[in-house]
Length: 167
Image 1 (cartoon, one colour):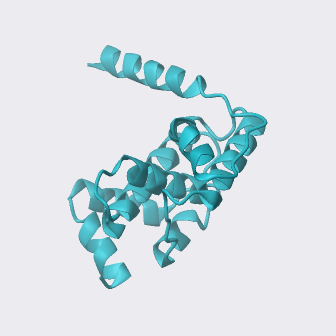
Image 2 (cartoon, rainbow, N blue to C red):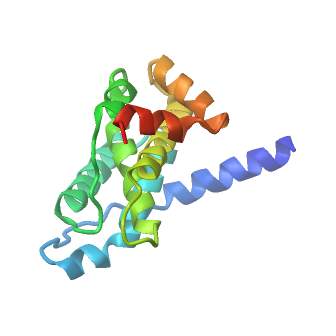
């Protein structure tokens, strides 16, 4: 079991490392954004799975690429609510991770209308994953994320989000 876990971690790490930030791209029309959708998903995965103290220049470029794409696309609409405040308070770069998780959810969702609760849940899960990975790489302890992880494990995270958003 331990060998399999180490193998899985190595494979995940290797696939995340393969992402290259697109250079000299044009994001001016709908086709441009659609053409880079797969790279955006790879970028989101790389940001979540790469330790924050590694490849900092690439991380800055990846964040810039993702933010530029998110700001211009009509394929994703992210609502940053009060929920995010406590998640990113001690580790501000988790904002991009949260937005990436939300975006990946929307890009992979086949329904015509995004479920805001499930999109928030995806963003929170991405933030939790990155947080856990980076506790040994410079992240500060975050009790709120610890509690949200427990809620997710108990399958009460959606209800908590719904209550917080008053939906």
